[in-house]
Image (cartoon, rainbow, N blue to C red; front, top):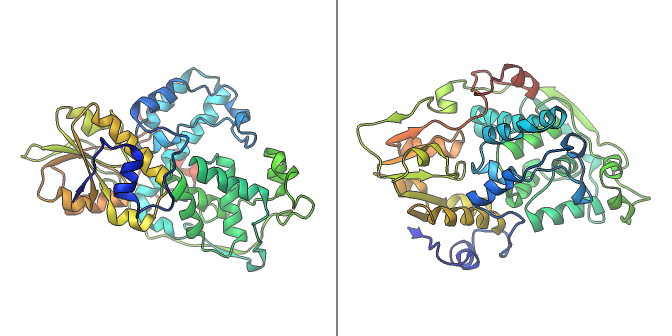
Length: 398
């Protein structure tokens, strides 16, 4: 068992504990981790003009992005909290922004139901045209997108769609390989939101592909085209083609409690000795943390999982910064180990996380006290084949 010394500076922590588990040398992102930075970002949020600016790409200063996604991803800000915060803005901007929050909730809802099945095509099988493969080495748009991702840990929605469409339809790689590359570097990287975006782009969710072509770049980031040596010989002049899109069915278990966890606090005769937190919910208002303010905390970096993921140091640093700030307020121990090893034969409290890893761990080591997950929308025991069908049934939690 390796306990991480949070008193070390970030670079020493990376070098001492994570050097062989990451895909790059020490590199910080544009985001600072910690509840205080999340709260500051939300307090400074201004979505005026969001409806018109949300699809802007380059120059970056014209973007409408909120840059809240890393804090939402790790539970420092809840979707409900952000939803309420934008109530004061104009309807057009507020409704478009809230659509994005609902999409995030939809992705979590879907992941809670299908779990690791999201590695497969969802509602449609897609067969690509192998003749569409192109060499991206000289493409300024793709190169710029990759450089920004690797240097900042962030991508706007448009470039996420561009990049995933390009990799799915014009690369000879398996789409999961390219999705993993994006996941390694995105500070807000998640298997629910990120991977669902890839399914939407390649048509496996809706049956309609999102095609990336020169047109989108000229419209959203003309400078990239104007400075590209392939401007007059662009390999993505036209939309990509697919050979076939056919219906498929997933075998789905719609048990609400199994998928979404308890609806009320679950307790046993024993009292917990500590709160176990994980990367899905690291905020001060995590239900277990908020209800049990006097208990110490344990966080475990899963060593085996990290070795397989080979994440960027940017992602690890962001989490370390969150944990360091927690350590200034509460007693916390952070380990690099197998969570099951740390939690076995222990009495602990936790907040349910509707993701496969949490479900696997707590099937082996059951919490003494388990709290319901925080949600924006009430769970439903229906498999939604589309965002629009889900939204019609969605009930916002008051």
